Image (cartoon, rainbow, N blue to C red; front, side, top):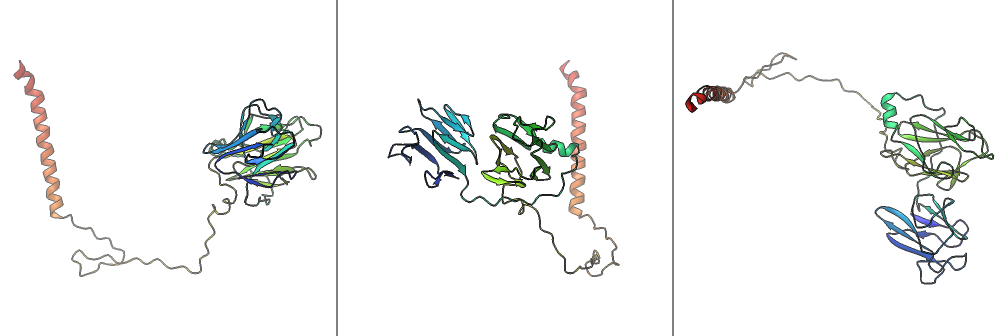
Length: 295
């Protein structure tokens, strides 16, 4: 994970465990004079819970994906952070390429079992009109300006049907429904793409993140599928003849031989049966005669 700067204010900064202090003061980890920053404007904390943005007291004009942050915010891959005039984005340093080859048609309707599994796969709004709302992928979701769109965005500049999100087995597909307008996926403009868990896509100021526990991450989708095995030859099944109990004469092909029960096993079984019978007799006598003896 790293911080990138779209306007070139600073070189890329790797995000390592610990704190990254940001401001105009010279002794900070990320010192950027000017751009309206306070001496210590904010800090990033990377720990086992994730990457956190902490705003210092008395500091204003801090936004994540266009939404103001006053105290604390959990950052995700693709988030755009604005500190006064400074813009920086959370991105991966060596992210696998985005797969743009998608199925030709939308998937068929899911049955009840498939719908139950698909209910765990959802897209969640992280900024814009649908911030905080979640939409499962039990059915294809159309995003656009149309009043009957599954995810309606009231924006005159947006197409009535901009894109749709589909679930194809273990793959989540972003399919563009317009020829010109695209979608930003983790900061990269795309039309069609295969989404991975944690991906963030943006349509203008409206951002969504894919939450899909159990689905393969980017770069693992192809490797998670078993490769087809080609057979160069086949071998006819051979049935071995069973041995005679004596060990020196085979029986006929395919003829089953009943193995004798060892004598030790047979005698042990009879001892167990006898012990059970004695125990049952003792319990019966105890139940019958105990009340009389007590009287």
